[in-house]
Structures are given as structure tokens and as C-alpha cells.
Image 1 (cartoon, rainbow, N blue to C red):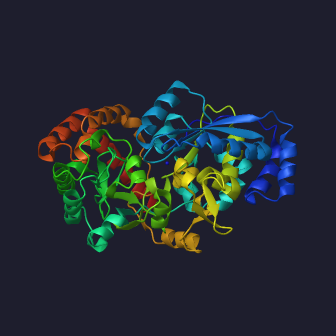
Image 2 (image 1 turned 180 degrees about the vertical axis):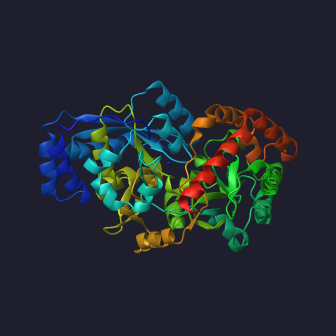
Image 3 (image 1 turned 180 degrees about the horizontal axis):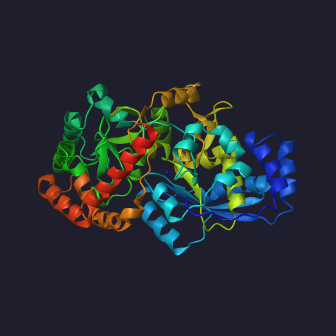
Length: 495
């Protein structure tokens, strides 16, 4: 997880054609790199400002220095990579984009710095022509469903990461604590089923957070949301595509009552409603469980990242939502001074294994060592450079982690094929008729959403208050407009 068209210079056409040949080959041979570098030196070097999501890493500057040696030679460009933590990313990026802060590339998605809304507001550049000119390697690398499924009003405004297509939630556990108390992973099937395990950890491990949770938490509920993290939704098993206020459903009431019970029992941090990150818990191992979106062999990835074993079990089925297709994207700013060079960089990032793995895993011999040509093992210094792999582009050219299956990427293809299409897949809500109401509902929602979703407040008391405020802000008008558009979309697409 896009805006107005912008004209571009054509002065670099011959250079770009050569760069694409090199990039599409995943970096090419040394002679190819030399040719590209020699041609690129005719240009003035460009620095690309790249904002991306994730906890800022101690060794970021050290790695970027190595990245820039490579990209300067390859495409005569360097990057200034700026990281903003997960919980702060959306708000800070909205402010910077609105103020015209200089930037070239930025992470966007369905769940952070909203892709569709910002595409329609003009924050992102339309990429159709740039993809054709400088992104052929991207088009070859990506499953076509990503580019097709992430179009907004018929156009691409960001490059999706080549990763898992479906979204499947899992309950995730610190295996050392599971084993210590002989807790049965298979018993974790629903939110309610977690209570005996959480109770055990709370009673026997006072220094451990039983359920690691942040303020953006939402319980797993059987809905496909019209706008992510807003209360308008249809049921996943819908036949009539009726849009409901999710907060008025029995499923939401039950889920929020369970979270409230866990909060009162001390299974969740008392500061959860203001907690933006629990990275400190993951690094220290002082957590028992949480919930996460998975991918094939994710347990190995998490275990390698944290330095101790992590295991998981499904919390839901693998659905393909709009937000999973748009779950990790890189856009080019509508105000970028270097859009062609930015697309050249994104093409290289998504096709060149050396660059992709350098940005993802850090410096060989410092942050990791190779076990084989395609597999790595983290070194102690790896804790100073632990990037969110999913957010950085094509994951299918990244190194395997020690213990990963050699056929990992084949498993990804199988996983993608197993996905169940969510009912609203392909539908993008045009909010222009209800812009003021959405802003008002968003403001009203901010007053209570985190505290309600994390169990910090009593749903018996706050759900009625929340619904009253949302309706006063115009929620019913938004639902009516969404219903109208969905009905039209269904008719046009034989749904």
C-alpha cells in the first residue's frame, strides 16, 4: 500500500534502455555494469530522497553508504533513506506530503499512508508511462495480479512488492515459553481460545508481556472493509454485499469484550492505546504471543530476525483483499524532481539481487554471513540492521534464511494460488462525494478507536458513545454512498 500526471524529460532515453537491460537481468555481469556506469557518468549524479516504514536502524547510514557506491555506478544516483516507525508513519507522511517536503520515493499501502486515498488526492505520480519506459524489469518480475489489482481508476500510482498475495493472520508465539510450560499451539484457534495460555504466562512469568500489542490492533473479525480501519464493511461470506457499520454487529461486540477481558486481566500492556512499537519486546524476548500476517516459512524469517525460535498457527483463512494486493508499495512523489531516475532505482531494486539483499540484510561479513550462495545466517551485528523485508520491494530475490526450504519461492506461488478472493477485491471507493463526512468520521474515530480496539475501555459503555459520534459525523451517509457504488460495481462486473 498515486496522483496527478506530470510530464517527464526524455533526454535519457538511450541510457535508460541500456539500464533496463542490465536491471532486468538482476544486475548483470561486470562488463554490463561497467557499460551502464560509463554511460551514466555523462549525467549529473542525482540523490533520491526515499521515505520508508519501519523502526530506524542503528546501522542504516553504514548500509546506505554501501548502497550508494553501487547505485552511483549502476544508475548514477544515490539514495537518502529515511525511516519512520510504523505507528508514526501515516501521520508524519501526511503532514510532509501536504507541506511539499522534498521527496522522491515513499512507502505506501492500504494500511499506512493510504495508497488509494493519496493517489486520488494527488500525492503520487501516475506511473503508467514510467513503467513502460523504465520499469520493464518490474513488469517481468511481478505477478500480473499485483499491478492489475492495485490500479486506481485504471492507473498505477505505485509499485507493489512481489510477495504473498493473500493475507492470512496467524497467532505467533515465543517458542521458548511455549516449550517451557508445555503449552499446546494447536489449541490457539480463536481469540477466546488463547485465555488459558495467557493466564499461565501472566501467573508464572511476571517479567513477560503475555500479549504484545500496539495501538493499531484490531481483532480478527469476518469483514471486508470498504476503507481499511474504518467501520464500513461487508461480511466475508456476503451474498447481498450489504454494507454494515461493523461496530453495530454482534461479532464486533463479542471480539471487543474478549479484548477488554484480557486487558483487565493484565495480559496486555496498560499503555497499549499509546504504544506505537513493541520492537523492544521482540529484541529482548520478553513477550509470549501476538498476531501477525504470515507468508510461507514466515516462522524461519521471524526466528532469524529475533535470534530465538518463533512459531505460529493460523488465526484465519488466506483471503486476497485489496489491502493485501496493496499491502506494500513504493510510490513516486507527484513533486519529485527526478521521476525517471526514481523509476530506474525502483526497477533496479526489484530486479537486482545484490542491491535488494544489501538494503534488506545489510553488509556481508558484518550483519550476516553466507551459508551457501542463496542462504544466509545473521551475525550478532545483525541486530543493528533488522529491516522489514516485506516493505522494500521484490522479496522473491532475497536470500533464504538458515533453515528455509530450498523451494521457498515455489511455496509462495502455491500460497498465492490458495488465496480466496474477498468480496470487495477490485472495488475502490471513490470518496469525493463524502469527503467532508469521511474527515469528520475520521476525527470522531480517533477519539476512541485505539482505546476501544485494545480493550482499554469498556465496550458496553463506549460502543454506544462511539456509534452516536460516528453517526453525527456522517457515517450513515458514507455507508449509503459506498452501497451505491458497490451496487454499480457489481452490476458492471457481474458480481
